[in-house]
Length: 360
Image 1: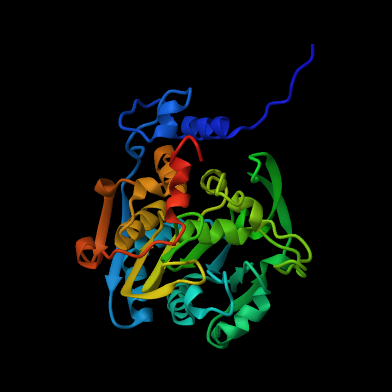
Image 2: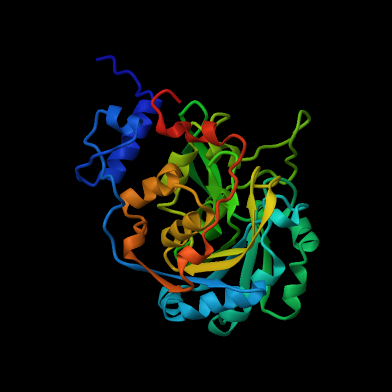
């Protein structure tokens, strides 16, 4: 018998995403691409799951707002940290020479101030920037000074041991992705300290995307441009020049790589052409939760975007990877309505929404 290899088409890829998200539920009012899929339609609302608690604070001082949010959910954090051997603090260092695009040292200082009394070993602060070396970013972003006060070890993920996971490339074919082993270790308590930003491919980038894309490494000598050298495995997660697989990749990898504690420092968010070339939003808020999806769900609302159009988060909510239903999120601190803004999206936003259409 001549058996032909299965070709992972866009239709099949999205159908598989639908199967993951469906969990056998019925649906109505779905996007066109799900109506066309030859699978039982998924629920039109996020999957029912346990309630989540999210702290929302506001204030003039960045560090104070972050610290206040963490204190509101201290019991949740202590429960989540049980049986974890180490703490890994993952900032957003996507563009190490653009401070607005990166986690602020004052935010990290507040996180360390809160966590250090709970941790016996050194806390690891690590990342793999999109370009450049993390070791350079630790200097330019003023992170190194934190080691003078806290038990801190710096890790450039590009130099750390890795394992291999799989994502879909621009042809929607499986490709291996080298992922830092620290983030896969079940004994690691992963803290995502991110910024609410618009994005050029995924609509918004928040706590999950900070961890998943940061987990993929590049060759230490990698450079962008026509004379680029080496390989950058983050490219595969982004899923091609027309965003063919980015939402599926982020959703799929979130089953293995996700924050145990999500912190979103919205003292200054980014709108427009993020994640590196946008402009500041003077928002002065902070969000924290041990449910990463609930934290990102609240942040999407604060930014004024339609949660159903952020594909990777919508997939995750339907699959029950966290709490995505605002009605089942207990908001502590500030009223959500008081701090909702409308962030200006990336110039390519209409193209980014093509994941919802059959023709994309």
